[in-house]
Length: 410
Image (cartoon, rainbow, N blue to C red; front, side, top):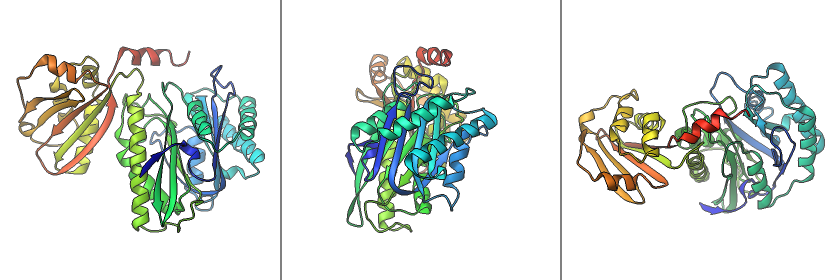
């Protein structure tokens, strides 16, 4: 896999745009559109929150309907208002938005996917939304700048935009995969609180696309956490228009494995950016569990560590309080022998062993503080129980997290 530029416009046949519709924010773009020249196979994973936003309900019906899948052409996104907990008015807003996009793009409304992010319980201003759709359609472009603008338009409390693209070879043809995404608060899978849109010109059936996406999400977005809260709007959707010209992937062959591996790596890179940009975060905090008895247990243990508020606070304070990490392992719901656990903290400044065989070691506190003061800090938890491993990504818990969320609606 070769990393390249272009985000969602890197793949052939995809265009993007952004516009300032004035939905909530002033002086910045707050709507984005992605359009494919050709109908696309599509797949999506969405929030498991029982309270699902209207656009999530709209999209799930399309990507899970065999008659509608394979024909998707566009995605319309707004930032500032989530269109969640809005009842029938919210579903009506989806209908109006999709119909507006269908008319300006000369497609059917069932070919339009939707996404919203922002304040829950607020209603979309439909006149501004439809005006925004018309403006978006007029400014569509297949340039890297268009993808960059779209990635910025969907941001809420993100401090940086998040986009990526890669090239792989399938059936002797160069294929591209690109993505834009947002989300740095209410981050806790499954799914996490974020929006992510992936485009590819690879030819792959909806069934195999769904399989590849779910496998990639399992090791990427479902392994990050910022604050343990699950959103109503989480959506990750992928569109494949087949314009690379490779033989359509319909089974788990070599090309499928190459595509799935590239998608997994691309989404892991994006997911880490979400964790690193967590609301108020000053550091990316990784938990790597190794020598666990099963992969599932390794995943649960790693997630427990990055979810621990006390551990996150210790990371913010550069405090080598390894007992908090062992405690988080202990309440994860996985049975293990605590007298066999080793704990080491690693960063670009070096590494320091805090515990061996479950007992605290003597170490240089000043050096440990330096190790914990880097932008990326990793806790390596060796369970000595098997050969399985997993990594989860989170961030520290700072004073700014409370400030940002105390003021979020204002």
